[in-house]
Structure formats: structure tokens, C-alpha cells
Image (tube, rainbow, N blue to C red; front, side):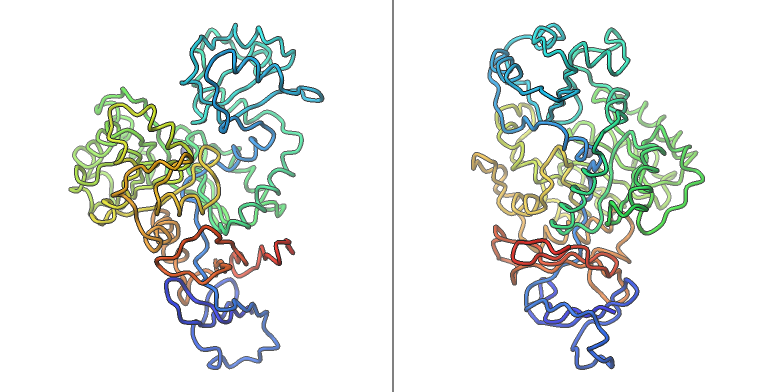
Length: 478
Ligand SMILES: [Zn+2]
């Protein structure tokens, strides 16, 4: 049994003790009321710091993060011309590399034609793969095309193809498991206890990869695995458990799709699967098409299904308030305000930028709100989600949507309880109460509703009652 003493369960400022047995919280209150010898207990003194339910990353792409660990990050580099890019790539050290991989690239500020010829004329002599900031577009050279065994004439350039993404991620990674361990350590340090893999291509082979990584203790936290909508049949026989469970089916529709096509696709899916539904939903236009189809055309078929809008970037709470009592969950990525906000300011044309990731009005209308990092396309550090929601400040210190700021209490609720509810797991995780799973993080400070959180760190990460991370004078002891 484990006992946490002197713990302030946020937002309370009263110190209490929490007793944990078999992975569950069995008592919260005064430790003098526990009829057990303290000698028999594994005791963590929280030193009157705040504790929170373990953080949940409601939307991320874990194996993409791992794959990027072998790639070079371009997100901090501003290329203004094709020549800039040419110089940079030519100066990149290719020695001892079998393949040159980049991510976080933004091409829209570059004048000049970035076609296949451009990348071939760099004469790098090794395959080159450059992933766009959003993860959707890929720039590559002919050697990479040959390596992937694809016919480039089948695609537009740059390539936007889920098939190629899958081919790239299936490529052997020599230090894959080491990188998974590194990633796992990072997640523990950041206080995540559950993550949601929201990949639209998620299939059975990736599910089995997770299963093995968990079995080999490479991943310690709990994983919700969404299903790619084309792969649902593969999962008929699969049994979920607490460590790895099936989430909603994930859909992504092209921007120009008609509502009748959406209706057909969803009707079809609903007839073969009882699963909850999640939608890639960025523009207000596609959000309208999805919600209108679901609630005006298919409402009677939905049953108890939960609906998630992933990103919900241009969700307009006032426009959609008629749906606030539906089982609808908005999964925002407020960290994008910090990560990509300056890019949005320069390139946003037909939508009021101050209304993106509209957390405040969504709260006012009582929508269900969750959040996700969308890592590696957004920063993985949860502090970025929290501070972006509170401050709405970009990297260059511009403010996007002052009126949409929320307070620390609201954003912590979203990243814990809101995310748990969007997984139908609110009875087990997302809050700290007797009977719930002991997924707990101990902070390095006492925080209140109005605290600044710039120096916030995690002292302990406890998952299912087990301490998976402990910070000790900046040295990891686990
Ligand atoms: Zn995503």
C-alpha cells in the first residue's frame, strides 16, 4: 500500500492524505484515521505541494513522435526562398546516415518551385524525406521514392497520401525501442498517465506494436487507441484492457466533401460498428457539415455514441449551441497558439483568428471540453497547453483571442476530467476520489486558481498506484 501525505488536491489548499491499494484510491482524509501501521506503507511526503489527477493527452501521435526522434526539426527555421532551403539542405551533414529525414517544415513562405527536380538537383546521394509542419504533406527526392517503392506519377507533389505515411512509418527504425524508452521517460516527466493515439490510419499491426511495447515495459502509461475508419473490421476479435483500450473510430474528410457523402460513409460505418466517432475537424465549414449530418440526418442512429471533434480549431460555440446537450466533445489544441500562432497570423484569411480554439465561449455554453497536444505537430509539454490557454500568446509574444483566455482551473479540468469524459473513462480517471484509479501527479509547488505556472514541474508521476517517475534535485531516480 502507498500513502501520500501532506497533499493538496488542486484546487483545494487543505493538506490531506491519500491511501492507495491495488492501484486504486481507497481513502482520502486525515492520516490519523487510518488504522494501519505506517511502517507497512510506502510513504510519499508531498510537502504541502499541490497534486493533480494524472494528465491525459487527449490527442497525439506517439509513434510519429518516436519516428521524429531520428529526424531533424525544421520548425524553428524560417526559409524565405528556395535558395535558403537549398543552402540549408546542402550544408546538412549526411555522413553515416542512410536516410535524411526532417519534420516541422513550412513551405508557404517560400517563393520558387519546390518540385521533385529541386530536391533531386541537391545531389544528396541519399534518400531525403521532409515532412510538413502539419504532418500531412511530404517533400522527397527520387532516391526516397525508389526506397519507398512507389510510383511518383500516382501522386501530386508534394505528396499528401496516407499510404505513403504508412510506408514511411513501417520502415525499419534501427533504434526504435531505445527511442520509445526515451519518449516514455519524457511522458512520465511531464506527468502524463494516459495518452490517446488519434491516428486516422490506425490498424491492427500498430495496435500489436503497442501491445508488445507495453509487455516489454517500454511504455508505462495507459493508451487509448483510436481506430482508423477503414480498418474497423480488423478489430472485431480484439479485447481491451486497462493499459491499452480501443477508442472511437477516427475519420478525416476532404474539405470539399458533400454532406450526402458524409451521410453515406457514416451510415455505412454505424451499421457495422457500435464504436464512438471522432472527426478531424479544423475549418468551420467541415465542422458544420459533420455536425449537421450527425444531428440533423443521423441522430436516430447514433444511440449512446459519443462524438469527438478533434482540433475543433474553428468551432463557433454560438453557432452550434443547439448541440450543447448532445454527447459532443471538443478536443482543442490550444498549444498551437504558441506553436503555430505566428504562422496563423500571417496566413489566416477567411476566419476570425481571435476565435480559433474558442475555449472560453465553449465553457460558457457548457460544451464538453478536452485538449490534446497533437504531438509531434504541436509541442508535447503540457505546460504549453496550459499556458497557451491562459495567456494565448504566440512565440513572438502576439496575443490571439484575448477574450478566449480561460483560467488555470478550467484548463486543468479539461486536461484531466474533460479528457477522461471524452474517453468515457470519467468513472476511473480524471479526478481524485475514493474508488478511482491512482493516477496521480505531485507538483513542485502549491498552486491556486490564479497561480502562474512558468516554473511548474512534476515531482512524482504515479500510474495505477505505482511510482513511475520521481524527480530528485533535478536528477531522475527512476
Ligand atoms: Zn492529429
